[in-house]
Length: 426
Image (cartoon, rainbow, N blue to C red; front, side):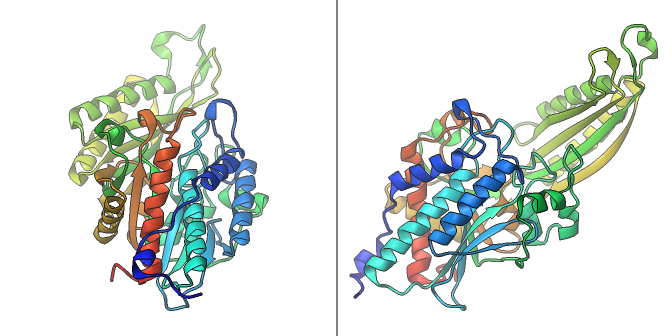
């Protein structure tokens, strides 16, 4: 077949949005429940079902499927030769407990839809592709079951060793190694470092919607410091034990939680803090808790502000323990530095959206994304479409079909430039 005109080739392929919607509905069934809720913890049975579904889609689309030792899934479309640029796109399909359907999964399904559209236009035009593509599903982006988050992408980027990651354990003492083996996703593929990585994601915040805009790209990301802290008191009966003699671990935790919010208030808009998880032992109504474990997060784009908040938090830990007559220990610390995503990919996203009639809003990424973990080793970018009400990590998380379609079309247009022109970032 003879290629079409240059004008036809420059126009990006049109995405079959009905097919895209069907794919979203299909993947949402694995771990989905009433009201839009989704619980698909990484390496769970629900995750296995979704992974099997994705692997089948990849194979049917002609992609070569490989799984690495931390369970990352890669689908290779190698049609441009071994020396051509390799462009990666995708996200993750694990979720938070009682989370929403679009966080992560949208980016994976969007990658499927974009590649499908590109394959169709290549077949119609007869052009020779100048880039190869890799569809990715990263393991344990959410960090809900195993900590830290961004675990699979962190191994792939070299931030974490494989042994460190495989040794992480969930609340029941099951390791990542054991969970991977259990669901049959402990692979042997080598690390995959692409020439560029584009991740489409729902915003998970209110800024696009408030500005009345449909599209954003992330140029910088916040740093994060995450602590797991245990207060250790003395288990006792809540009835006869005198108040003055209680060594209440949960009381110490309560003091610290309140102080951490004060630290955020003092830090201003560029500091976010949270305690999102609390494990209390023995967790009985009539027993003074003997242990309380807190999962603490500090986030900021300013390294000095983040360091200052950490020092204040450490002083508050000591104070909280003393007030509750308890002891404390820091059981783990994870850090992610603030930084910037690729400026050339940002310009490509901006130009692609403009060609479709939309302005690009510049956003910070306060949350972590796998593309952020990969940014030290490749050109990476996160692009966003609006979240209704700014909701994320909740069953009511939603992005309209029209906005999802626009995001997939921008992603497709960016990938198409690589397909037609090769390394457009050189």
